[in-house]
Image (cartoon, rainbow, N blue to C red):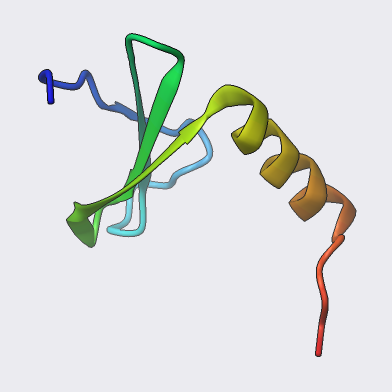
Amino acid sequence: MPTLDWQKSSYSGDGSNCVYVAASPGATIHLRESDSPDVILTTTAPRLHTLICALKERKWDDA
């Protein structure tokens, strides 16, 4: 895997719970959390967009 240029989310505060994002060739997006930097979620822009929209609209099962 190429070296990733991680950027801290502008919505993350100054504490230890920060979200970082990096893009790589081929429209792949990588996400990680500052407390577990070795755990990386890899997805595509359209899939991340769908997830963010669903979270904003609270389209998930509360059960």
